[in-house]
Image (cartoon, rainbow, N blue to C red; front, side, top):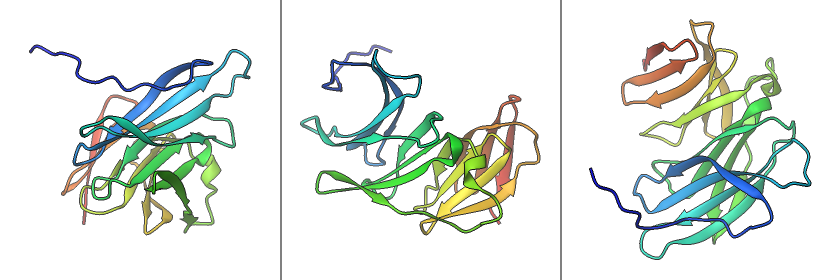
Length: 193
């Protein structure tokens, strides 16, 4: 396989050292969202994050940029674009950090999420990964405490506890169910009923 570089996406800021934490493409491959960690030499150990939404179809350009802060200071792990609606972006991280954003008129707009289960504090969850369902605007979340949660209809729901005692490191959604990658190296499959 021979590859050649066709486009370069980059941030404008030269005052800090930045690296890409996560990257995701829209289902139609017209957009890309990048989560970058930015830590300037004068800052504390808590990282600042920048979420940048790019149009990459013909003329590559930044559509919108926003600063993302995790109030508890824990890392932000993942960013993704809905496969059904290219304007919906989801961000997850430690300390129960969840954000859903919509790109409207070249600006990110926050979408408020509510918790359906008040018995469990979301702050106890360290969301390491998430995955959109391919057939609806719902997101499954994997946490370090073996719990799988779901965001559906703008509500965070605790779905079930994994049968394993390992951190949930990755999730892949298929039409028939979820494949869960665990910190032990094994993969569990959960069928949709």
